[in-house]
View 1 (cartoon, one colour):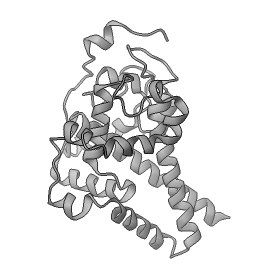
View 2 (cartoon, one colour; view 1 turned 90 degrees about the vertical axis):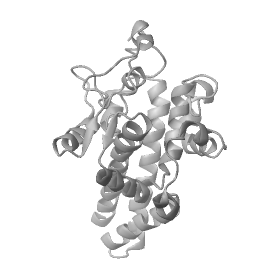
View 3 (cartoon, one colour; view 1 turned 45 degrees about the vertical axis):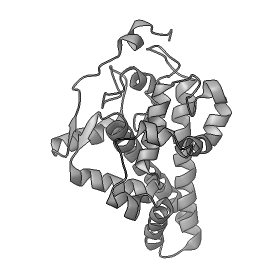
View 4 (cartoon, helix red, strand yellow; view 1 turned 180 degrees about the vertical axis):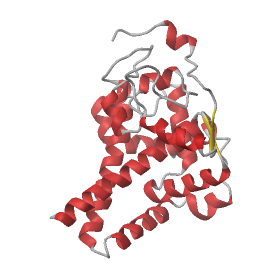
Length: 253
């Protein structure tokens, strides 16, 4: 039993590493250019994203930018207003893959992330990256297949569920301090390194910090602050630049 518990905890820990990489690297850095990373840190993030998620960054970026271009209207790849809450929460990975592989989304919305030699050799091969990640778990658990499977399954299920919740819960339930259907949920922000402050993000997409006022906590910002102190990254704006449209028509809380 202690071994199973340790495997679950390891799976959850790996999930949180992947969540931080998703919000800081894929989302704030690549998708919105709110952060500029040093080449060394960029390569580390690319590598860790590869072995913890298998995601091709330009695909994630393309789908996310399309979401911002058509937020909760026809064309949004994963809006609960269009697809229904349950379908986005349970099947978001299917909606993501459909958009990522439709032949137009990535080409149109991620043209600035053309594949380089590292993508062709490594990072475009998601299953290879995930295989390496499982290999790391195998070393950690001394080849115990059961514990490896438990850790890997915990990571996959929790990562997919939390990422889905950002789109499903984050456009359905919570506070709406700005216009639109995106919401703020602090409990979700705790679990997703700040992504639960989704109304804030949609109001100021180029802000590296997702917490705008007292009482809002963005755990992802802690990692960004450390990176700034170590001079590994730069932040685009020192304070949130809320769009005129978002600020002009706040929704009732």
